[in-house]
Image (cartoon, rainbow, N blue to C red; front, side, top):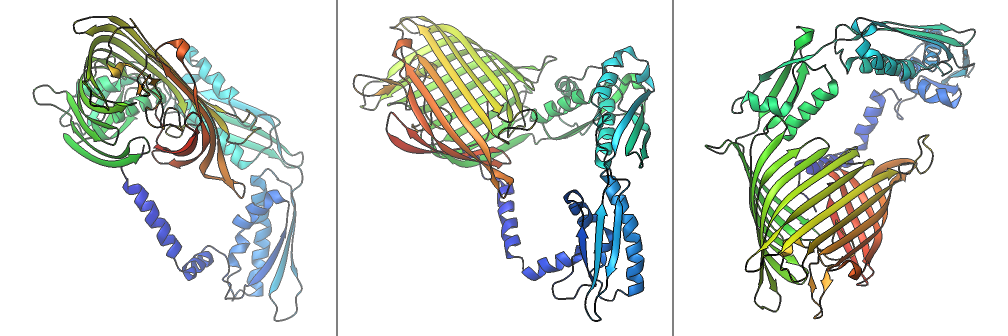
Length: 614
């Protein structure tokens, strides 16, 4: 499914076009400005650097002497001064990689008059410095607070530059930064690094490290102070933020609250910060927001291989007059489905739960039939960072029309439903690992002259498994994407059920190699209808594409899908689809382009989809 065009995509294309059209002379001028001598002007001198590979990039990038090669009027006296300074500069640079006793040879090679002066730089780094001792001290409230014992142990256990490790400036800085982050993200937002010392013994190649972390006082969340609220009530925003006053400070809680407010749809921008200048026992939380427009209309155009070209329009009203509920109404038209619907949603309560009232009118091609359906839903919805829960009462009505213009089959049902989904994916919207699980449970009765009870269950699961080991070995960046789905509707064999409660398979997000909802129950007249049982499975291997040893924004994929639909479990007959695909890491998620072969229909099919959803 392709989402509406975004200006960002057009801007990227325009930027690439301008870069391609940039004159070569401009690029050459940029190179000279960066320190490289112009090919049209003679260099002041040439330098030959003979160092181990580890030091080559460091010296060629940062050695101060190299910046003066483009100065054609550089005199011999000034060059001599630069050579003297270059030796000390080389030693400092080598020290950043842990070489504190290098042997540096810097000499000017004799050249005939009129030729470019030549310089040789030889560096023997000597033994690398190793850490022999690490001391981590604590000051402030964290030192004696029993509740902070686990935090102290975590800082000590996660220290990156352990005894025996090679000392480098980058590793030393990274270790201190991580320790400060672990200190300030829980309880102690005003914590700081009060002392740090790296005692280097160049003769023995040893480093003794010591730091002191001053936590300051422990902080607790206080009241929320709002900036930018105009239409929405502070109580509603407080409930959505769900930061309990008196609870201990946690950066993750603060970020989760900020994300909840940003995802609510009520605000265009949200920023939360803790005011550490006041009472640590009740530190105010500053909430800066910019409210969304009261009403919003979004028009969209897109396409997919399942439904073809698509037009959509979505209207949002954040505060319906007299009700203060949010109304979202949507119209969508494509080759397979035409729908119009609206959802009314109440503000959340203290448990982040909302009342929801929804209505949907839809005409959809289902197998060999067209189904005109209506749905009414009333219930409660709870959407969290990882877990979504829904409880609702639902009315369904469907008129299923055969392609031979026979009288439609009308079916109605009333059901009580519960659904939940758990997501634990890493790196959204481009997940590299993780898993998800979703279950829908429902039960009710058909309506009409004969009422028959029924029960319905639908479960789906997905796992993304990296194939490289914890030590970095294995296939770099490769992973397996596993997907499974199963459904069953239990009812008397003669019960007439709405087709919207039954199952079909096939398409971009189901079994590739087949048309959208083309896998169903094959009747004696050859037509395909929705069935009471569903089984789906998919295995996909993904790996980044590399060019000259570097990964690009594209990935290759090989997959096998399987699916079956039937009216009884023993009648399930698996249909296979397999193929290859490409993935592009777009800003809105992976763009998937797949070429799949449907083994049952013996034909190839192209599938296109954008975005990740579970």
